[in-house]
Image: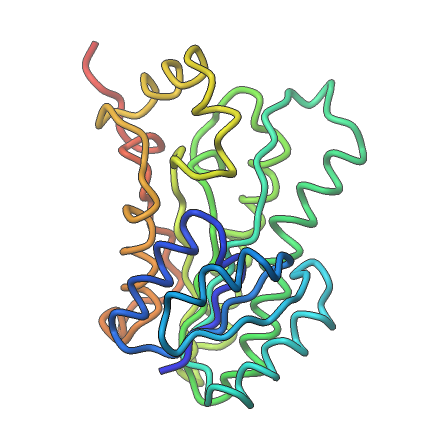
Amino acid sequence: MTYVIIGAAGGIGSALAQRLAARGARLACLGRSAAALEALAAGLPGAQVFVADARDLSQLESAVTEAAAALGPIAGVVNLAGSILLKPAHITSAEDFAEVMAQNLTTAFNAVRAGAKAMPKGGSIVLMGSAAARTGLPNHEAIAAAKGGVIALARSAAATYAARGLRVNAVAPGLVRTPLAARITGNPASEAASLAMHPLGRLGEPDDVARVIEWLLTDDSGWVTGEVIGVDGGLASVRPAR
């Protein structure tokens, strides 16, 4: 099986790549940093690097086409490109908002389009939502709007492509210890506040999310589509006892 991981060099992407490689999968590791991707792929048999900016549809579609030619028919595409912005709306600039939408929602749409074209006979697409799009969290307006769009996109695309056996699902994490979240987890006060918001009493690790994405990408979840799976320590759905 060949899987495309967009944002493969990130924390969750690296954990997912390790899991899929252990299954014997062929991996197309996509992203903007050739050096980071090459460092990851060097330790993974069957992995190849494809440099592309997922915000650019033509770049992404070309990279997916090249991956299929090099590695064989695509069985699954996951979009792990994204960003985190924690600001209330009144101090979020137009440029901030546009970049959050581009990094999160535009990349997700481009992944769906590229994946749908690359998998005409079925497969799996996994997008990244967020607990912030499933419950009200302060100072998350821009990212909640973008990830809410991702969740709606996943459900609509699941309906569009179900007849051809192409499944589309989303994973909605809480705060995960990744390089992307380092500005939050590296600040003791911010980390403590975040811990208190997660009922299970800890922040997520990349593998917590990667194992769920792995399940959604593979035939193990062959009768699952249009779902949003929270992997968030209960953040979006549970109110702990005080």
